[in-house]
Image 1 (cartoon, rainbow, N blue to C red):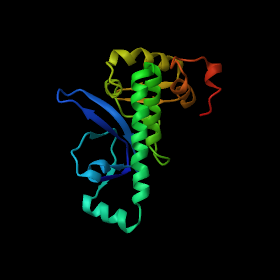
Image 2: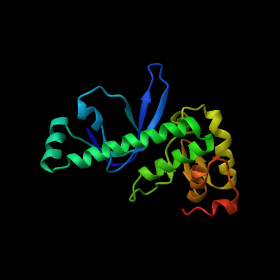
Image 3: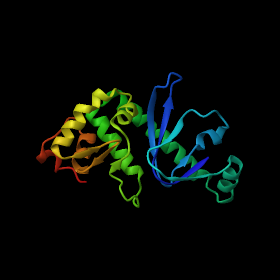
Length: 192
């Protein structure tokens, strides 16, 4: 069981053939591996770093003692249920949202996971290939979307990273029903 103290990590499901799908992003304050410790079951996902960070490892027994001693059982259950609810939303988005909406939601989830003290929360240290794989897509599916957003000044692209420069517009794409790029006047209607 791990506690993320700093940095961002991605929770990934991998098939034996090497194909991967990102299920979630975790950051400072998140518990990682709590499902396997709850039932001593097998590990169903892997965790990969997005950027350098610090995690603290806690053996299962020590974690259980800690939760019991501080009376945190109900809070831990609520935390785990919250993650399960989040996974249902994620699955629906993968199946039904457009590529721009899915990509915008992914960028926002990585930014949100950074926490308030991150020095560069809007810089996402993931390549275009990694972003596409996180969505279960080929890079060619997201390249035109990123190019359009870059031309509009909403993002900056560097080798191995994407920086969101206009959160309001990316947020609007993430929540719009179509997920399509919106005009300047439409994008300003959504608070940052």
